[in-house]
Structure formats: structure tokens, C-alpha cells
Length: 192
Image 1 (cartoon, helix red, strand yellow):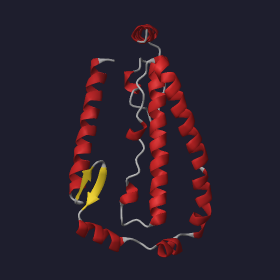
Image 2 (cartoon, one colour; image 1 turned 30 degrees about the vertical axis):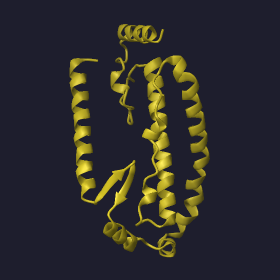
Image 3 (cartoon, rainbow, N blue to C red; image 1 turned 90 degrees about the vertical axis):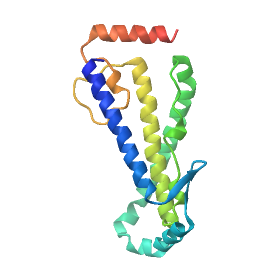
Image 4 (cartoon, rainbow, N blue to C red; image 1 turned 135 degrees about the horizontal axis):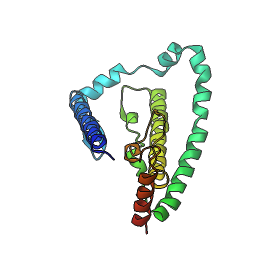
């Protein structure tokens, strides 16, 4: 990786850290603390949240009919999500130790904390759990795939791609045959 790329990656990471600090500052204004990984609100905040909750009947009556009719399409995605979850988890459990790739911790990507928000009705909580699972699972799968790609084929693409994983910047440039051979040898030597 060139010095300029390394510097830019450092700047991006510093900006991500700064963004996370800003998120933490904003979290503080909503009067909760984390206890054993769970958000705990003050009692007066919980009462306010309960008062803000939209009833399920009101929520459903406000929904557009086409939105309601598409719900089965959205929820049917649970089938490929669960299959992906099972297969990617088995793949990692079987292959990563052999390849000597550090395993991805699923819990770092999939979390179900929104269900504890008392201003959400039951259906909103279910929807939030579903989105948390789907998006967390996809991020988990991208990380597993990124680590796999880094191990087997760490070459950048010729054209710009959206949604690059966190390891992409470490890859050798497209067309850099010598760089690829050096990287391949280093990876091979590291996994002997």
C-alpha cells in the first residue's frame, strides 16, 4: 500500500472515530446508560416514551393498503437470510481455521437492542428486529467474504465499485503482477 493511500486510510479511520464520538455525544442527550450491554433509561424518560407510543390499531389504520400487501414479500426474505446465516457461519467455522483467517464475531454485527424501546409498539419492535437481523447479517457476511477475498484474491478491481469492504484498501492494484505475487507469498508464508 502506498504512503498516500495509508495516510488517506488513516484519515478516514480518524473521521470514523470522530463520527462515533459525535454519535456518543448525541446518545447522552437521550438520558440512557449501558448496563451489561443493555440500554437503560431513567424512569421519567421511560414514561415519556410510553406516552409517545402509537397504538397498534392506529399504526395499522395509518398504513397504506399497498404497504400492508407487500409485507409478505418483505418477510419472505427471512428464508434466504436464515439460509445465508447458516451457510456463512458453517463456512467460516470449517474453513477459517484451515486458512488461518481470524473468525468474524457474529455478535459484533447483529444486535437486537431496539426491542427495548418503549415508544415502539409490538409490530414496530418486530420490524426493527427484522431489519437489525437482515442488515447485521449482511454486514457479517460481507466481513466474512472480505476476509476470504483478502486471503485468496487481494487484487483491486479495474473499475470503481460501491460498497467496498473494510479490507479492500489493503489489496494490490489491478495489473500489479509483482505486487500480487509478493502478497500471495506473504499470505502463504503466514499460514504455514
